[in-house]
Image (cartoon, rainbow, N blue to C red; front, top):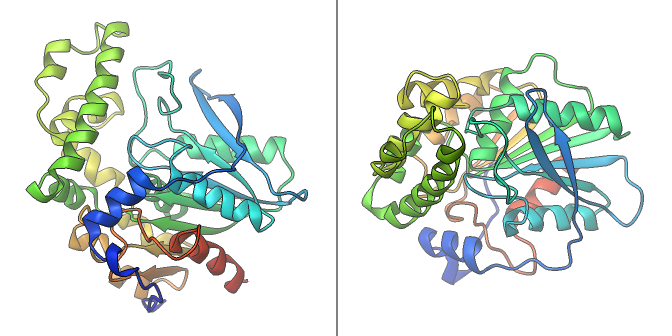
Length: 320
């Protein structure tokens, strides 16, 4: 499909990508959402925590929401989407990736940008235990890459999955990694790195034969972390191999489910390759929207809800 002309107009004080990203991540508050946790056991014996919220009336529609790197189902960009869809008659389940729900997972491996197997297990669990006739997927950042990769690589997508929405997605991971390592993103880079190192230090105490504490302490960058842990723990040769195999960009031509991708042009986390204009123009099921403003997982709007939340529902309703 041709690239969509975005109607998003950022409020004046939120046209700076850094300000928007920080405000949305640290200051925004979403209240009044009642989440109920369900723990499921995965095929390898590990667990995932799912946080459910419901519309007032019994619904046959569900949105599955996936968070970003080191996020969780209580981040306000997740709860904002859940609450908005709940208020519009759609149930929501927010998926916590392994080790992201406040408790370390049970295996040495955890989660990564290209891991679609856990999402597949969550979808199968929902289909086997619930009776939803329409399911939508919405992923943010890392979760958006997982969403797009799943939709593009999976040949047997259940018929109940009707639409996909992906927001602020690093479609080309190697390019996004380079951007994150630039000086302009140092504050974000260091926060991610320190959080990940702290988690890995805890794992090293349980899996002393797998990784050395001295190696973890020597990590200086996110690339180091991916080279030492992410790649090795999840079956890749090194960080570069992980980035190449896990990027959703290569799978976009195969998407057959109507899917909306919203990437702001002032998102400092994204490289030029993360704006897949050619892929969108050549795939009638891929709708690419590139607002001038929005930052990374921002898109602040007037009122209680953000643009990406309202736009996701509009896309679903308008595409029927």
